[in-house]
Image 1 (cartoon, helix red, strand yellow):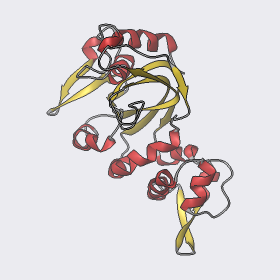
Image 2: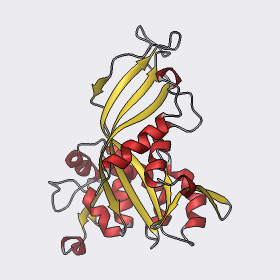
Image 3: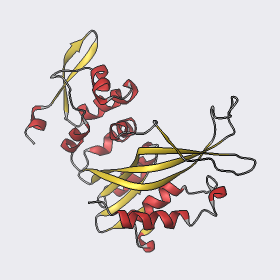
Length: 251
């Protein structure tokens, strides 16, 4: 069960660190990370706790929470230390609904909020999880995907007539908490498989069913095969064939 009221309080706590919209994008710790840390560590004393030579984002009754908005590979040193001491939940946000606002870097003017089609999907996490394969089977490892409605802020400092090409990213402000997906054991990751998969399938087939690019499907097959959710079932035109493991259907 998600706690929308607590999330909104955490969001306001994070936004209080920004002195109006002109400060968006100027912080050392980004608002998205700060909001999630306040949500999973509502007691200020539970945040930024020193453990084993590292600093945990939050510590609670359920163990340690590590919030990483991108580049999960950075967590490797922490996970190696923390997992031997307590359960560790890696929190990873997914922009299920995404809006965009442009900032004029000269005047500080912030443009109108517009919805964009460039949203994320839970399936995309495999691009990051492939770097944490060594930890995924550890009994203390947990993954929590947080589905959010958020607003991206970008500066009009790029190329082209509208200065949007290769522009600088500012803050990512969470607006609403839409849901949470929890993964505790390898079989849980089968929930990320798309519907409509044939009995045997290639990475290309997986991408098509998931409606995501092959660059997302390839690490997904890699991780799911490592976890035992998928099994190799031969080849087709020099491409590996996969099938869902029998024990997954029995869960």
